[in-house]
Image (tube, rainbow, N blue to C red; front, side, top):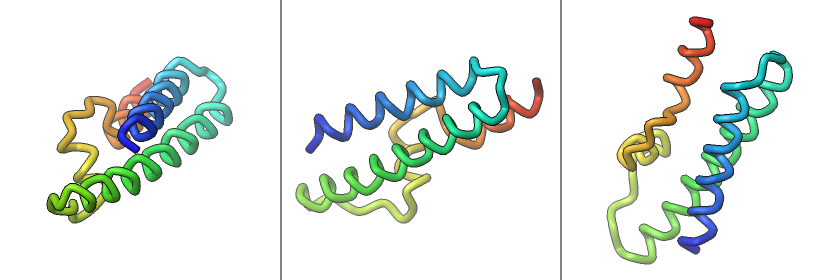
Length: 84
């Protein structure tokens, strides 16, 4: 379960990196949607893992991602796109 979660995190990061370098707005939006999809999958899977360990469940999925120290936070990435 943890390995699957790790693979999905890698896919999410890959899509975010591709979106950052893509000039085509439609393709960028598609990549961002895919990254968001994998982010939701990771969040659900992390909640399952935490539930099995008996750990506290995060209040919201976005909070869980930020607490992991992920510098690829979705809102920051969108604001960087708007600056270009």
